[in-house]
Length: 204
Image (cartoon, rainbow, N blue to C red; front, side):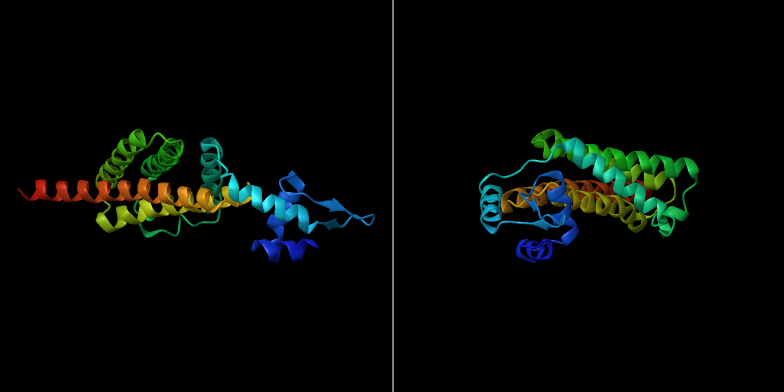
């Protein structure tokens, strides 16, 4: 099978197949002309092994991927285009950058099966996001948008990391998605609850 045929068969982009083959994740062969070729029998065995053995991604790899993706977002001007970001001075922007790193590290703990610690960390992160937002003049909507920006960066990093690692197990993908949702939903709830409590205290 050719590279494009394998990409269609697996349902991924051809660049992903090329990357997997280069890393040795996917069995491949070279013709005398230097072209990649794949044996269907080997691919079927590979796919079967991926389904039967859920792959596990190291938390450090996920965190690094998220950091790299966020740097790309910043370099492309994505942060500068956010309305909430424009309201922040330089020290506040640096605080949000540190908050983004803490978000990634907290998810690393959660993915590493330390769910009890992860839930406590999620609530603490949500509280910190709320306090940070209020201190720098962000309303509830703006603070929520700020958190969602970093959450989306982390989500994209997770997807890219799993795809690059050649994870084909539905169980592994499902487990990752559930943990991501549980962790970030807890942060968002804590953020909103804290804003609500601060507003009520100010009104009394």
